[in-house]
Length: 173
Image (tube, rainbow, N blue to C red; front, side):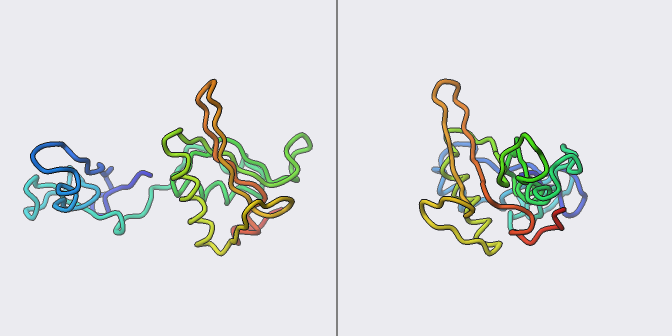
């Protein structure tokens, strides 16, 4: 996720552990925030930079895709996922394309190391939006799946049977 400074609008940098005499847990407990701005100055931090906690920030909207080119019944779902930092790569609403899948879906790229964490983060986001999930769903029930191909290392997080209408987003055609 990308964030801009709430004061000047410039890009923020993520605070990271620099190593040294403190272990990472000790250092993290002493930091002034999760992100910092190199343009805004503050006399309250040793670095002179202005610091912000993640809870104070809103994600920068992702304008790297043309949402009007997406199927109308999944468009706002993709926008929601991208706003929350998911790297969507394929989607469909299950009705707009003759040659597409017959159910709504969104595929997202993840790395091998973040597969489980991102699947849990997606589940939490969707539950916060009022969706419920059951183990071993089949049919028209919402599902979240993760796949890994050890030959090429591709990892895909796949969301099925969820669309804009189910999430209460926009108006599907």
